[in-house]
Picture 1 (cartoon, rainbow, N blue to C red):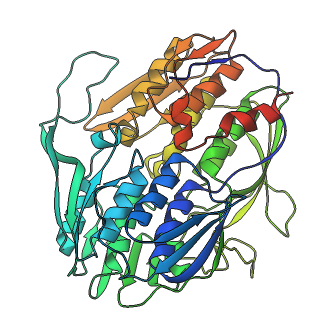
Picture 2: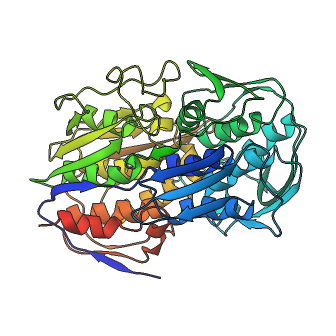
Picture 3: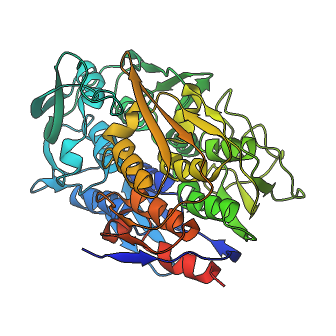
Length: 483
């Protein structure tokens, strides 16, 4: 347990640079391991989650060196170079490690047991196990009945959906002999999509995936960078097996926009603040938080290399970008990770409420907790539609954020109708400090620290040790901005 006390602050000023995007970092380790030869990865974030992926591939026989100044070197052995681990692989609390690793192991002709920590062992895995079984993998998992989304928490008891079967870790998987499939995803999930894409590298023929709405496309971009035969058109991805991955030798990971979101919102809502964030990932499938905040009136200027600061943001993809970048970005721009990046200058501004629609959720699912803090300070009403996926993150984030922010004086309502949930927040003049809980969730903990900076009086958080899962130097960076 690591309790923490937050005191209100007058303003945040300065400039910061952040370690690499965690989603890209996971994929850089995995895909480098499946290519032949040495790949050097720069600006690698040594968070607990990313190190779980490193440890997993070391157990599978891949040499990975952690160097100085946040560099990692992976000595890949090709698609068929992994070894059967001597004992079970522990993925800790990293859902990305677990789900993407299942895709890789589906193509290996040996049996592996995967173990997770207590929190991750409660997260649903049937969504990824089903398509991998369709491809030919043999998977055994813990089976339990799931009773569905809790009733409307504002009106007490209500009807519950009929219970259904769900699967959880630990998981045993025996791969090999995969066949290609055509799969229409019932849930928008970049992790599930990525697991299928990785398994498809080992399957015979063309695998086709159709998403209900576009999700983050880091896997597609990196596979293209490693010369996989992959094509994307709107919400459809087609990948062909039989082609060895070729390493670009050097990857530089841009700063994590999910980590940046806490400083973006802080600067937007704390009076007289002005923060410059250098070299942050601006992948269009991840910049939903910027589009929403600008719609709310936030003063955010985006600077791309070779361009002056401006307010335009790229659209979501309409096709897979070239290695040089997304079509909406400057022609000929070379990006060492296949990802666009730039600088963000954020100034304090008066926010107003907005409606966040279903199709926007996948591009900002991890940023909803901190957006809920922004909504509490904004004038008027903010509506988050179709946010039920927050129930199955590291914790139930609808509960953790609603419970904490209500204690601080926020006006929050949560509704469920026909299996869908929405959150309505009516802005208040100011939050007030009180005793809150992190619920063991890193994004809840950091969001409450930001809320505490704007509140009247002290905010006491029971435990912030969970922040190490994704952003171990969060507090030290925040301290550099407090003047």
